Image 1 (spheres, rainbow, N blue to C red):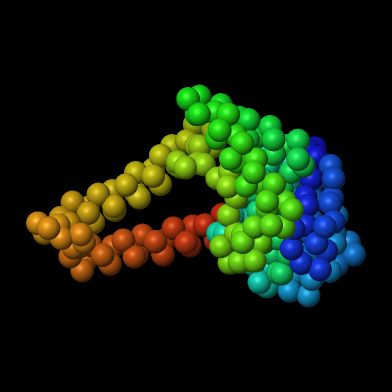
Image 2 (cartoon, rainbow, N blue to C red):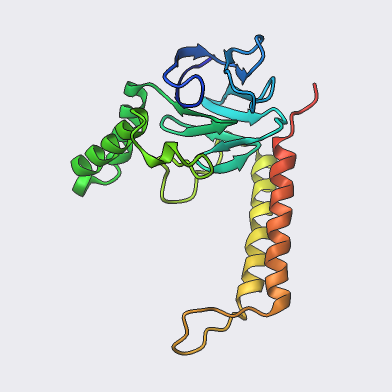
Length: 224
């Protein structure tokens, strides 16, 4: 069981703080939820947060209007302190001040030459968001956390050998499609655009559609 703090930055419940709520947590407009929000655009049972392998997993409960985390539509996603969850007309900030400060310190430590300046910059941006002084609160379609990593997310840990092999197989497939689609790309001298043959472009669109299908399958609530 993990504890999580959520602060409402935008919506009818703006200013409310749900401190150290025990997981699993459900969020929705119905009374039976761990966190009930006064928002008609939120489903009765909209979002679930649960602890798994020392990580907090957010799962959209097939809500009508969907869930965005850091500006991206999601079915299932790992959330971290400083992330922004948009559902309905409400915007939630994950983590207490001390939770977010610890994450900022950890991120700043990865940039030793300018650690102090980087940390102060992140702290200032998060403070503006938490105090409702940021444009990020006004644009619900693209709300993003300043603490997002610049690179790809880490690979999942604690995978069984079979799961590791399945993940490697999936990534090999993606890499293969991208390699074949881009190896014949043409960039003309002096041009700023890259040209792809139509079959290669179509292969990339097909890959995008297949990945979207996989994400939806992964996010569907499991029976049992």
